[in-house]
Picture 1 (cartoon, helix red, strand yellow):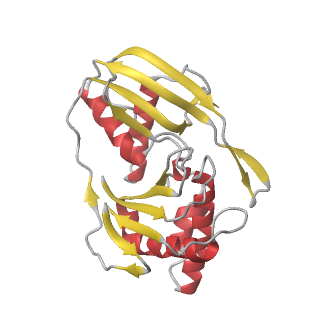
Picture 2 (cartoon, one colour; picture 1 turned 60 degrees about the vertical axis):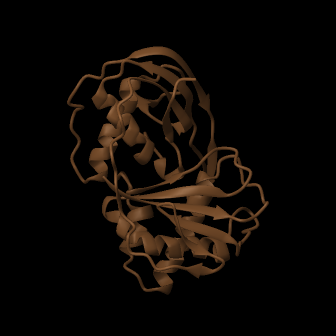
Length: 266
């Protein structure tokens, strides 16, 4: 899996909303559309990121809930990595012209990093050509805490799970299918049976809504959060969970949903 990570920090004391995913993705869409028109770019750039339906988009926002300032990441996957300069242009357009929030607040002081290397600061963009990273598998651990850090939206029997009935197999399978889709591969059944023990599980529903001005309706973005204490997990499943830290899990990852982390047992 090839990827590019943009990290963005706005130097402002303005406090963002509890859930910034909807706000920043919406504003990014407006900004990207502007860039397409201004630079006479291939319209497919905007279409691929926003207009195509029922597809796995090759990007996602990586956010945290309840931030005190605007700080987030943006991942590009596979062939979408080549859009990195267009995305940086769009974020510049977003911060300086489109703005954020009801008052469309704009910002002049912000920093942009590409794979942890600063490329934009004080109004200056440094040229870079080494922007793609190859995902490397992590060292196997058989016991750890799996944290669902933003709402995870996974369906069971056609309905989104909203309680602690969430199963680890569902998370593992979701990551496996998402990884296939990001590489333009067809759906296939998980080729192994996960083995593990759940020592404890603390899962709850976090209800998040967003208003879509395009559809003139409120959209449900709520999902399950919490953590699982997992022991004796097979190595294949562990590898997929670690991959899930990068690519996200479940539906609406483009908004920053489905963020997970694998951490040490306290």
